[in-house]
Image 1 (spheres, rainbow, N blue to C red):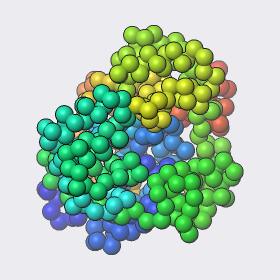
Image 2: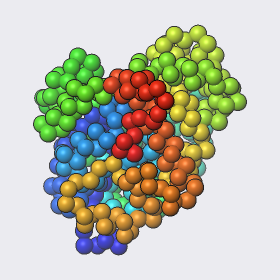
Image 3: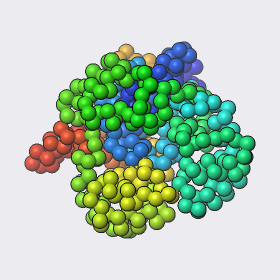
Image 4: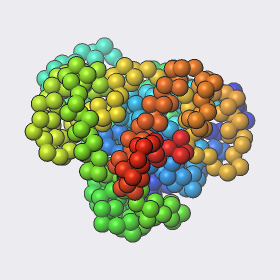
Length: 406
């Protein structure tokens, strides 16, 4: 690496919201002597196919307050993609910076050797044949991956369906290999509770559990959040910008999707294998977002897959956009007195560094369009947060809002 005087680590996360498990991972990295730790974080929409619990600027602020040095944005085009595209785009950004030595990620197994064995199997021609065979049976992707690996090597003791972090970890390893990157991967065993478990263990809890607790009130998540992070989230909660919910914006979603033709929906990211036809049919009778999800869901398509398609259609994210790699690096937050790290990023990055999308006239048209699309996604996010929605509805000129930090 060109910056050989500094050790730089990175994580890929969503911080939805930031909790003690994230702090544990950060501490594990710091204990290994890294000088700087970078986070690349999903923007206002997350990989499970929904708006983040609070906007990207607040979430970046929580990560910085907890000890991360820089928070970068994974654009919505990729945060609303399948695990392989999500991972590839994030690793691509980190690799393009030319300063990241190591990538850390949480893992149910915590066994890097095991994950590398699975990765090696997935890169074989036999795996690709098996995967296509399983998918043609109507099996959804995570199950198809697991079955394909077992069909090739029955000796593998795997349970990817119960290990969403291991699925992502596998995709990170595949991305590093595909990009021929020199970034070194580290698997840190997840502690406390499983990813989607709606329960807690002492002061550790999953993001799903915390989001469910927020429905009752902000104080219900306090034991599971670092103290300084909780203060930031409580302020956001008091202002009405948290929690963002699908229900607040579901009328806007239906208004958008019911105006799409079958041909328009075909080019949307995630609209393949006839799923767009199923969605159009169910849109005619569904009365709510949950009703729509339930009526489209079947054994071949996971809930997250369908939800991502709906939000991709709502935000006009086309399939071709997800197969292009990121064109820029967007900085959402920086820790004070980290000029050395910023200088390293500016000096070594292959991609332009963006702090403010209002100052992009010197960039090429392709980058400008990508940034403007992301700004529109920020506008759309305001429909899912009550306080920002009220601002939008009260604007006589329907001006862009919620993008003061854009």
